[in-house]
Length: 172
Image (tube, rainbow, N blue to C red):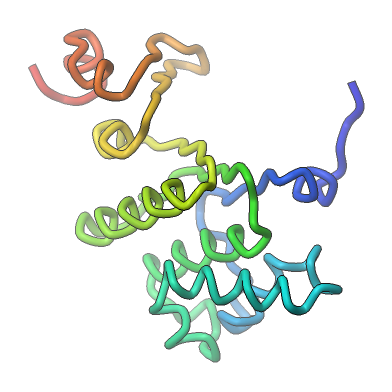
């Protein structure tokens, strides 16, 4: 099987938003977002459309576009990381631990935005330790234990499965 280079993966429509935000802290919010659109840099109209679209999802970033990314709150940095990935206009967005280190209210807001991104046509693979929250917005879920799939199915079914509830959702 041919091994693809990162830019080839993005060109095929797959973009990864890694755990831990990993924003370019010394760059501004706007410069970070432009980095997400690196592959469409030759098509300025497409880049501008992508930037405007992500600002609709994350209006706080529009207000902070000249601010250094490293000075943003943790939640704002997470929004920036997701927005930067979206600028590439992926077909499939891989998000790793979106809620890590965020306050519960911010997590709820972020999950609504992730749902909206999905409803607008982007497929999302969300890897998340907060199983209850992830299943509340997912269509389908996989429960992993030490790297192996132990349960999978429609999210509603998993939330009703007594084994999943007792072992992974913290309810008895």
